Image 1 (cartoon, rainbow, N blue to C red):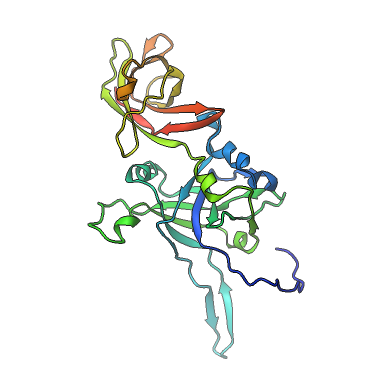
Image 2: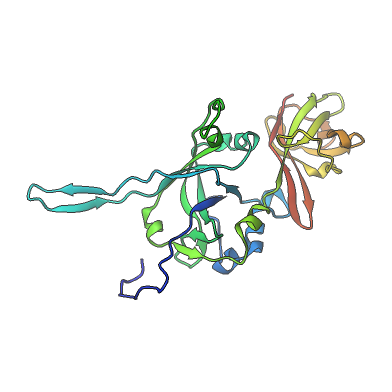
Length: 297
């Protein structure tokens, strides 16, 4: 924390605007402050050229933001002396302005640690700095708190995509910076790849290594016809095999969102279930990105 000295008051008495967005990145992800003020700096984390380089995303939380931070602990001695004995780090509930299908992709990280950068309505970023002066998010935990059926209607229905965030370090809040970037909040939101739903239509054929997959635009169900090469289908994990990759694709029915993809381990067929994710890249940035799909063998 900086040394205290009286420093005067500004002529403007403006308050910070509301939190309207949240950047979520892998723990301990850093960049220079100069890069954090540019769209290119965040593109390198949110929509780089490869899925392996993705380090985070942005979520619009216009559907609601509720602070749940506990008040500081105060105690009073038997002589009537009152003092503060503990500060608590911030915690809040953010309601994502996303679809139920988008929200479901977060179910697998319930309780995981991430770094968070709140984004204000005017695009300003709230962020701490490392001891080396690099931009880093507030360390904390992401808790998925709504494993429930949709509400019947009203305001609660709009709060379906509920994210509880608990920061770990109150000292980061005592030292955070307000950065004014050279991009708008909506320009940042536009960098998030468009979500595609991937599903199995015909199960993996152990005789030839093919599986028929269907790709649709998330929620609308409209066919996605943008996959043209086997390399766009990446194996994320394998259960039995030591290696595996998509080696061929038949996209003659891409207008219907249907793709016949061959997955092999070298020349051998895969012997155990595996997970796959598909993506499309344009101008060195991922523009479309699917869910991670488990293909059972």
